[in-house]
Image (cartoon, rainbow, N blue to C red; front, side, top):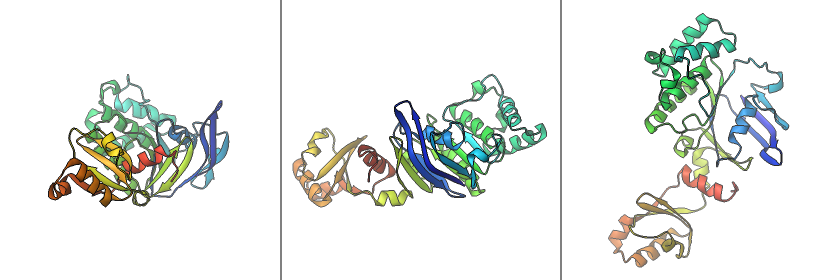
Length: 304
């Protein structure tokens, strides 16, 4: 559905996207992740034809983007920032957006009722966009992106800054759309959302580093992870232990990247003077998550 070949974009001396090639299959949810400034937004805007690349090609449904009319209805785009009109109501925004595509008013109204029902926004259609919550604004932006009933939906960090409950609701909608046959390309800063994608592409410093299913990427993680519950301990305590490659702190626990988990577990227990039974509860090996893979790739410049 989407094929990108050698896409490149620079702003002066700064290369935002460098020779990126990527393919999104029909009916797939592909998540684009990477550090801030990695080139995610620039890449998505070129895919949608909003930015002209310095090099490379974009193909939508087998057709070169340059051959597709500007008013194409097969592609929906939801930008990172809320970009609709705050002084218009929900329905007025939808009518305005639909008219840009030349859709008849009757068609827009019929589709709006359907989509607003799906997003639980029907009762708010007369409310000004300025008076919507963050999650509701994102639902309105999604409704406008869906008004043409596109086969492909591109979303740039659509749930950024939205509360966790609204994020869950939003992803339920995306899953429903995907089950109905829609292809999704979505960038996200949240690794729990990356886990929900069929495949994940990691971009760093403008270059596509790794692409694969979440379980494949987690399987490629080269270390064992030890989770240690220990109060009043500084991270440097663990860095002094041989075989500990990295230390992260999450709330009330440490996560340690270890080459030999058994040896490290024994050393930690000895240094903390923990009895064997207590050590088994305080120190345990855990499977890596996408957050661990993301940090590992980012620290290594995206190289596996």
